[in-house]
Length: 117
Image 1 (cartoon, rainbow, N blue to C red):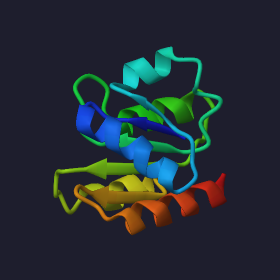
Image 2 (cartoon, rainbow, N blue to C red; image 1 turned 45 degrees about the vertical axis):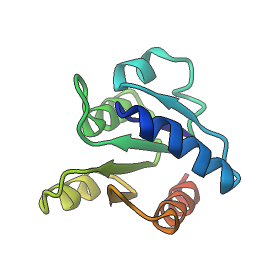
Image 3 (cartoon, rainbow, N blue to C red; image 1 turned 180 degrees about the horizontal axis):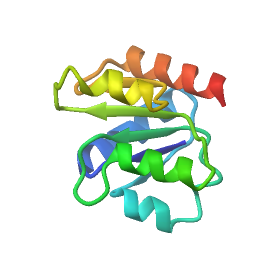
Image 4 (cartoon, one colour; image 1 turned 30 degrees about the vertical axis):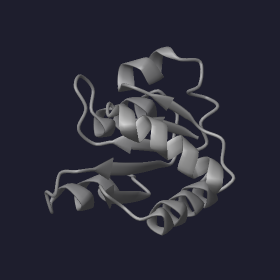
């Protein structure tokens, strides 16, 4: 499982929380850093921030699909644009969570994402 978020506090907190749920994860500061890594094929689930400098989470998700990697994605965001979530779900997102989200909401989204993989 990989977390891609430009917010350092999120990159530190989410892997710890995922670990409490029994999932190993790696965190990346940007979409570009993730794409340059050797973890693309290993990721069984992605947790992607919607708004990041450079390539956004939705752009990363589309790029991975273009490259033939249909990794289930959960999007997280602090932006409350009501039109965003239906658009992301239409593009193949498993779930979209507004920050701050509950531990239960994240766990449920991860369980759903892994079940689709």
